[in-house]
Length: 464
Image 1 (cartoon, rainbow, N blue to C red):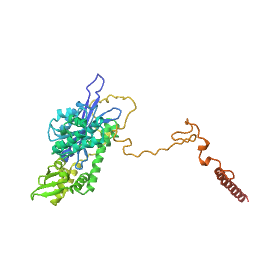
Image 2 (cartoon, rainbow, N blue to C red):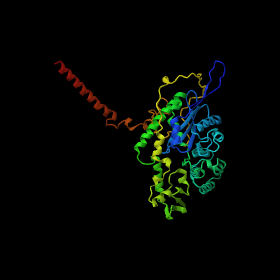
Image 3 (tube, rainbow, N blue to C red):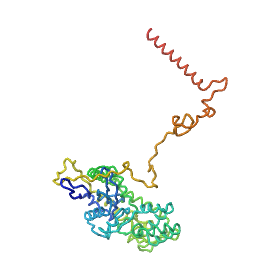
Image 4 (cartoon, rainbow, N blue to C red):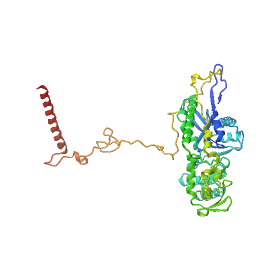
């Protein structure tokens, strides 16, 4: 835990609160015990009385879920704040300038410069979804979206160059935008380091964590920190209990990835060299070499993700081996429990907290934004307004004056409907036949006479 405050402003005034960093011991130990050397970084808004930014560092658990490591409440998102956060984070995790670690982000303000200063030897990946949002501002279209994702998903340099040529043939301006943008080592699998055993292209883990603490971010700083701690204490317990019921090796999400690749493995024809080498030949002349002793395939996907690719699965089937037993160690069930054994302990209420003899801090300066306070996140145009929720069924208003829709007779400015346009029930009946109103009134009169007779007879019986 680290707190930063402003220096003394003037005599008689306490220093103001500026920033607060939190990295709980069990979360730090869980990361060191089994998480892969990759951290997702993001910043989200604090929406309480004293607005600011919440910087987060999220790790990846054995089921590709999020394992929060550290977070900090800061006054704004800039290079200075990110430098302060990364310096404390690298000290807690003992990763001082090691090239073994990878960081993923949405290209936040000032983060590139802060990473270059604090951890210059680390790998920095960019979220492809964020790149696409920048691309479509100038070059919209689903065709470009599919091609950008195809380029980012290529796992060899040769396939990357081929996909880039296809984009140039489709749209030269979009191709120039991609060439002018960040180096592909930040966003394409073909240039990722393989030791992380994580081939993620998006920063969804941070987005998921931010969504789970949405209500907490609307509270004061101390209450927000406590709400986040309580949420994580319960989440760790629930995730661990769910995994205890799941008896198979490898988490449900990892096994679903393997099952999907098993389906694609059927299209590959395998040739064995009587040793550990297998040749996978597929449609449209595609061909790859697999080495089961080294857990490698020339498509590089197995090494990038730690999960056998479809070519390797086809070779494993030929060798009569179980693909699930060839998963990297970071996906195994025992590693999951090693991480989630680091539970958060309950604490007493604030009335039982130790009294501090330090100076009392004044709250940060309150900033009143113009207009109505906005609580909801600004959604992208591709997300849709309902965001998966059912729309409320609306009542259609009819005007009895003109018969129109969407207004009533009081606000109607249209001429009244003519008698020829009236409903058939309101038209007079032909001569010699009773109208519908007369047909309705006749049974009503008979019911009234019958009711009057019953009441009179009841009174007569009562008195006599």
